[in-house]
Length: 191
Image 1 (tube, helix red, strand yellow):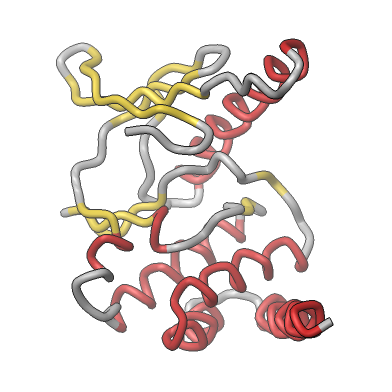
Image 2: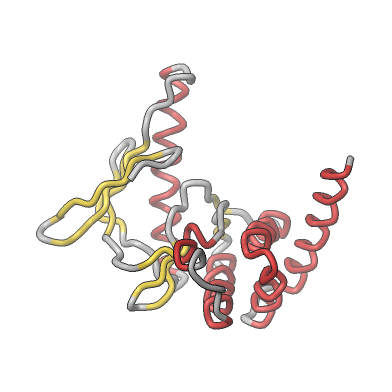
């Protein structure tokens, strides 16, 4: 499977199902800059996956990190966004997605692309994947941006997600900051 930043392929590691995420070179970047960006993003993503595990979030276990690739445990399941093409999101799924984000934010992890496209439904529960745009931040603005991203992705169900985030122990100040971000975005769209 090929994405904008990486190629994913299913492999086997010591008889275990695994996934290799290989960051692809961008021809439009100068080689030294491309090398630095790909290597930095790869290492940062691996660290974030490990940090997410510490927060008790279901996500792939990292087996190995190379300069431009991460080998991680394969998680069997269904992508949430694919399921939502066939049906409406369930209240339980909204609550679970909110709970995951609360746990990530408690470790100051900003996912950077927290949408149904990066959530999986597995036999163990909901899992979060693809921390490629993620980083660590203590800032309310950064955390609130994760909320706004999911709210927009969920459309009519977005406010339910914000409410669930607050119910699951997320900071009310972060939820309030999300409203502020949305107001600025609406102003920019009109301007």
